[in-house]
Length: 337
Image (cartoon, rainbow, N blue to C red; front, side, top):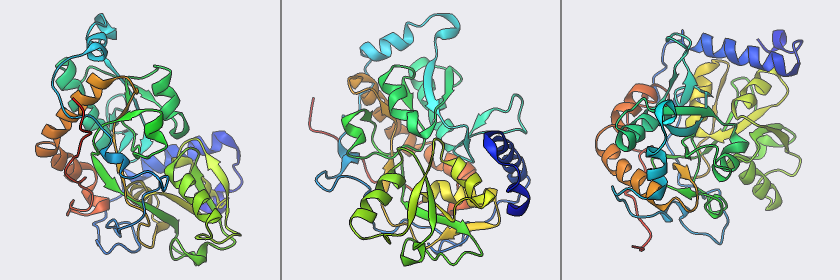
């Protein structure tokens, strides 16, 4: 496959490859997880790692407001939208298999996945209609600008809660737990996030926690100095394409995403265990307190009824039937009224 792809080149080729890869994987049987946290499409289980964040910041996933079902100015503005515009505007991914992706086997290539299920639940609660959503595809490196500039009401896009990000946007309580992991060809000598990455070229998404972690670890001497981490892309899935083209030796991303990418391409696999512990949250504007509280209220209900069904439908095939390591901890909130 890689040999055939190398002659394509260019952005257009990448788009074609992505489309072919997605169409191909939907025909693949869902591989069952081995749950051993090592290699293969099912090898996971979040290890106790160091969060990819500023060392002076502690527990950014707990820096959120307490739940409330009350409407406020932000929610009122959303509800005041007229006609066809009366929708929740949400930034999502459309290329992350089983998280947020367009399914070509559905009418209109509908957006589906674990994140998309959560969006529909939020829309149901706020607007009374799970379909009252305007989806906007947002690249990895545009998630925060899209929120700050008001292009979206929120982002639900496998977005890790970090200390740097809570300075710019507000997050809900966590709705998923994961960790950074290495993805590489099965034939590669790379064994994980260790010295076997020496003299290797690693791809990450610009603005991602993976990119931040690799930069910090190389400066701290935790990553070989000759590991090339210069290759960054706007969308994380583009790293898989670079790997398929033979332009990079490995990808570092969230293990939850890496497992789905391994399901897309049977020639690659997860290498080693996750080396961080981090949490996905719904991101909103800093001053949207009422919306943050409302989403946290929705998550209380969703964790009790809805989360597991969505996990079973979308993620159990790649992450394992036991969802214990993916469930976020009991939420803790800021002590503010």
